[in-house]
Image 1 (cartoon, rainbow, N blue to C red):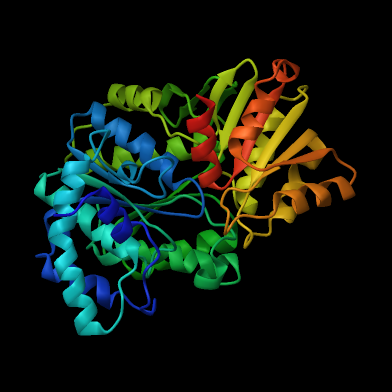
Image 2 (cartoon, helix red, strand yellow; image 1 turned 120 degrees about the vertical axis):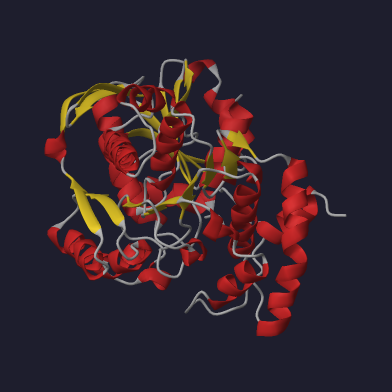
Length: 425
């Protein structure tokens, strides 16, 4: 009999040893499970940034439409159960244990037959798809982990809709050195006679995606800034029109979330063409009710505290643009914690012109950057910075009276964001 510790050890601990050049291991595991993915309909989402937010908007829309929908996302903020949801409810510990107990012996069989250990993400994906099939979901919103072409989620047949949210520099050792190479990997989720939606990025990137769509006889839909109008952004909500849909409101902050919401709206409109019943009113309600913790999320008013999981160059560019727009005259205190394998100083330098002070804290004792060394490097560049040895210590400082009128932006690793959200409250 398994418990949740056993589940986490299997689905959330780095254990894989196999090559990542094909999906053979994953297909073999799914075959042994009876290929539950073949009983399901999908929206498949890939991209460097914006996958989770787009999933949140979409799941909220289809929830309002009464469509029983499974959602598979990663990573989680506080609890691994967040990654598997049906109708906005996390999978329970009991259900998680039960489905993992069905997958675990077949994992052993695959590993014995192939001589390779499955990666935890592969096992988690298999457990999620089995759970969604057993619960008879009408639709599954499936978020790719890394890339697309060789991602464990890409064992599905043609989805109802594929979405590529953005292309940027991240996981380059796996995906390629140029944005075009990365785009080609992400576009691997496009299947024969499918539909793919993406925003306008650059002519080179969009051409890669459009070519992949053409080769697969898939419908290619591009969303342009000209599709958006009457945009009004505040630190509480954003209002905008998308094509003929007027007076849309979202509570995920930042200009980039308007584009993520538009991707979700277009996907919902495509679903109606495929026989799902989604009304414009349900789209409006779904967008308004959507929440996605840890992404430009306001968790306090005095002081103002925004937490955001920006941890790659494109994410930092978005963060800088958003805080400049939302808080143009505020004195900003930044809290940052990143993994040491990231080009973290290059990213931190993007926000230094906006910073009154920068507090550093390591998000992980083994894989996180050195907070003292990072603070020293920031001071060498002529800016104020102070290192802390724990998230709790940073929060004690920020909750002192000296900070009540400040605006505090916490960014970096989602491990930091999850801990900060948990300990702040």
